[in-house]
Image (cartoon, rainbow, N blue to C red; front, side, top):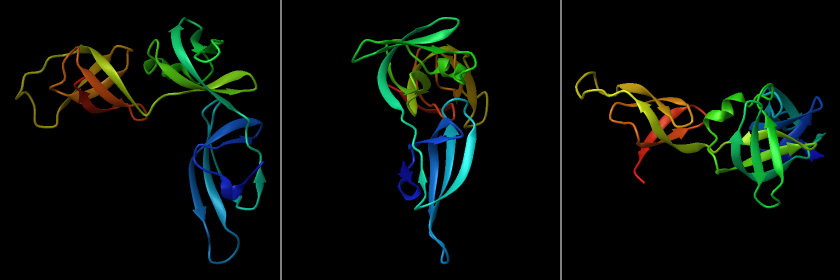
Length: 189
């Protein structure tokens, strides 16, 4: 159990029999009455969002989840396959119906990701906030074709489509914000 006043962003809570992760937390101390936390949570199972007001002294049940560092091996038609880097245990994460269909665009073979495990099942794959991709497909544009600030769509090696400035070419590395799918910068490594 955890007190409402101790809830922080990233805390896992058990609500409606499902694990939720706190994505936003606002502490409110009104002039009259008790203080409370306004909490926005996202379900780790189906992605639904729940907003709740919890008094700071109220105890809520925290979800007992385990986070493991695992190396992404490959994907087949049914599942993503991971290996725990410490114990070498294998994990299969079903693709269909798990809410993780779109994660395929961010997973790169042999990279390490954090898996959230609840009751023996993988319920979430934590994707880094920013990821470096190689541009696999890009159309060529001639300088002067458009006004400044113009963008074009490119496809990365994982199949993700991102809008980038016209000067980005095939084979170059770009940094992408994984929450918004927006281009951040060209990487010169």
